[in-house]
Length: 377
Ligand SMILES: NC(=O)c1ccc[n+]([C@@H]2O[C@H](COP(=O)([O-])OP(=O)(O)OC[C@H]3O[C@@H](n4cnc5c(N)ncnc54)[C@H](OP(=O)(O)O)[C@@H]3O)[C@@H](O)[C@H]2O)c1
Image (cartoon, rainbow, N blue to C red; front, top):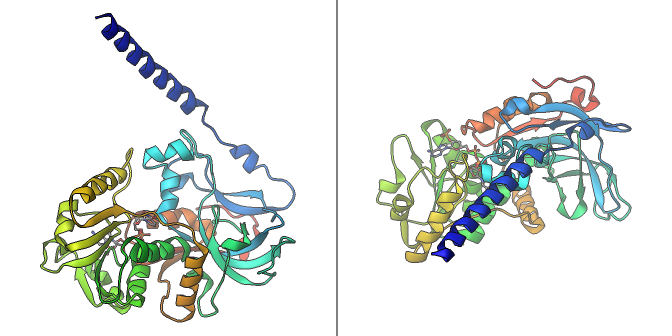
């Protein structure tokens, strides 16, 4: 009886302590926005945000121009692309990510990852690049006039690709490549279905799956059928007319960028040893899509098919492979809309609609490169 009471009070004390700890952590969580925007010396224009929220939180501010270390390269950004990742950080959703990104306010305050541009200066230990080189890659804070990046993560831009296209590659291209090749283990002659074939990742995935020698089926809406076919898809399913989980076709790999079907339904579309690679799904609230990720992992333990979530990783060899595929004309980034840096809010809002056809790109116009009095609208 006594032990029971002790346990009860201990549990209550732990819950109260956790609650108090969370309250203190939450209300003391802050960021250095004033310091970031009180730059002196050499400055640049960059998109920043002080609080989580809708695209209205984004502001174009003057901040310190980055200085490369001995092993870094300073790049003058020409184009940067928007990914769902950007608005997840902007909104702080799913909320569980705030444990890392800042409980009440974003710690990072900078937007964008993918970029392309021109090398402006190099650190003294940099051997592979020189001023004037055309490059692309990914670096947090790419919605800005300049980024600095370690030379091993910078990739020479192929001549046949525009800055807008090169600035759209890193996240979507790596995700498509690693999802198909590493998680899907896609082999020549196998059948792959790409759900969400017309979006940022999907347009890369269709082309990469073809280069891997697969028979490709893309799923998209009516307005995108011709575009997905033109990227090389052997078959296109218009999801407004047909549900691929209810058809008779079976696929060796399903690359899911949408997550709009139940796991049991998707399983029906797989071959006996097929692989379901979940890359994206409805995200938001506290944990979604991690709940689906967990269910897929559990299901995978009791069925023959492999079902799981894939998270892309930064890998120079893979970026070089994408570069070579682009240089050889096998993969061409698809650009939907471009926006000047001053309209980043519109670009992010458009990306958030989930209706982009390929990539949404932010470009640096000549006026913006001077950084003279631009207001974000
Ligand atoms: N795990 C990772 O490492 C990783 C990396 C990158 C991205 N992601 C995730 O992957 C997902 C896709 O990213 P993204 O950049 O490709 O997004 P996106 O560019 O915003 O995707 C938009 C596309 O989705 C299509 N779509 C919407 N509903 C659909 C449906 N019911 N069936 C088929 N297609 C549909 C749209 O076509 P319509 O307009 O024709 O409907 C549009 O073309 C996101 O959830 C993102 O967060 C994950």
